[in-house]
Amino acid sequence: MQPWPQNYDPFGNPFLSTLVAALPVVVLLGAIAWLEIKIHLAALLGLGVALAVALFAFKMPVDAALATAGYGAAYGLFPIGWIILNLIFLYQLTVDKGLFAVLRGSLANLAPDPRVQLVLIAFSFGAFFEGAAGFGTPVAVTAAILMQLGFKPLQAAGLSLIANTAPVAYGALGTPIIALAGVTGLDLQALSAMAGRQLPFFSLIVPFWVVWAYAGWRGMLGVWPVALTAGVSFAIPQFLVSNYHGPWLVDIVAAICSILAIVALLKVWQPKDNWNAERGARTTETESLTETAASTPDPRPQTPDPNLVRRAWVPWILLSVLVFIWGVPAVKTQLNSLSAPKFPVPQLHNATVRTFPVVPQPTPEKPTKPEAAEFTLNWLSATGTGILAAAILAGFYMGFSLAELVRVYRRTLWTVRFSLITIAGMLAVGYVTKYSGTDATLGLALAKTGALYPFFGTLLGWLGVALTGSDTASNVLFGSLQKITAEQTGINPVLMCAANSSGGVMGKMVDAQSIVVASTATNWYGHEGSILRYVFFHSLALATLVGLLVYLQAYVPPFTNMVVK
Image 1: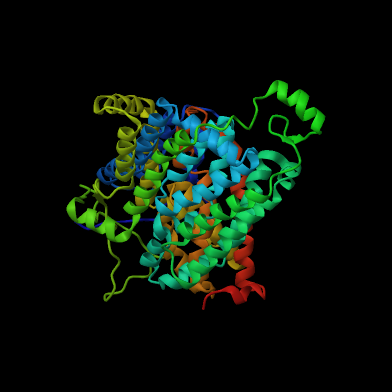
Image 2: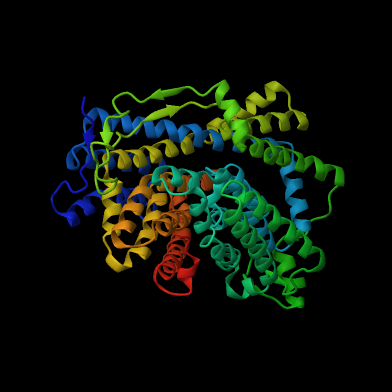
């Protein structure tokens, strides 16, 4: 059977075709943010619109469209839902034993100011988990910790999303950059280095930005030494490792340097402005001792027993160690060799084919390959399995019996049931747009912007992550298009392909998958529209700044000297 060729202009009118292609995204985000429909229902509504557009506008075969929806839903449940389920299981175990409260107390004593906690946990600690695991892990962990430290659910969710940006391109041991090299055929080291000449600027900005989003301008100025220390100690290793080693350990090394630098700074410096989290402003010492003490709990709890603190940290240390081990390529390869069955998706595998200009013009020597659709059940090497192993070990360490662990797991599964449905629905939408070609129609509209292409090409990466929930998926989706368009317009393709990944990281805030993860981690399911409205401006503003940087690197000296040749 001949594969179905995608058609990116089914109406013979690029403007009309783009409007129709945008309908699933507009309906999905509008239902969440403005109509405030429950998100699992909004996901199903968005899926219905995506299928209607694919079938009736883009003429995708019915069996392929239905298979695509099933394929996306399955991927949403595994590996992504598998990560969330097991992470919430570990979190619930620590809550049931009272150890999460102890952990909160130890962090509050180390960094009693909530602005410092925000930088240390959401930015630096989150970057470590992004580098080791990715796929929503950092947002789930940091949002849960921030809420337990006293942040409101909207703040904990939204601020964790904003902080989890600059490290994303090197997440999961460099997976997005590695995938980008695979689909474009460009040199891996060149792509790693180019992204490493874009993102460090934002590693410097994001710690300031996230505190400003929480505490305002005056509140941010009160902790500028912490924000500067976190940003510099992350940005410099990020540049050095990405340029002189490769994409694999960028986030791990940079995050550890950032955490250690902040801890060292706090030994000799603490904020002196008596900033009040409830009022979001500076207070005098008298006000701090009267009004705020009467209305809010003491932000510095009593120092708990050191032995209890050590016990509280063990589950999270186990999590960090096992997630890192699970992410090491040699370990992952070995685990995959033991169990990683791959199943071709019926009616979809090799049943569709991308066409020019999204892929190069085919020739008899190099025909276009059909789109593969294989579901890999790598249950042993999956990051979620490493998290589950950490949770079980931590559970036994905390004194749970096997029967108690099973009971808590059942309760956790029931707690996150709607989140799992939502993630499955969101990924189904993303996969339908991918295999039907509607995503490429949107991408082509951004690519046809002439001299402004470096700016809008960067926003294409942002759009890709907003649609798919993954910088890796966005790079696979648009990497080839970026290379082709750059070559046609005389721009360095390494610059634009790296820009796809660098711009994409800012879309991580607004993709539905990440928002559901954040709402689940903060036990605020059902308020995803509020989270989306909270982060949307920050996402678009930061993506615009990345676009401006890439535009300067394309045309304006001395920024042009930064481009990898």
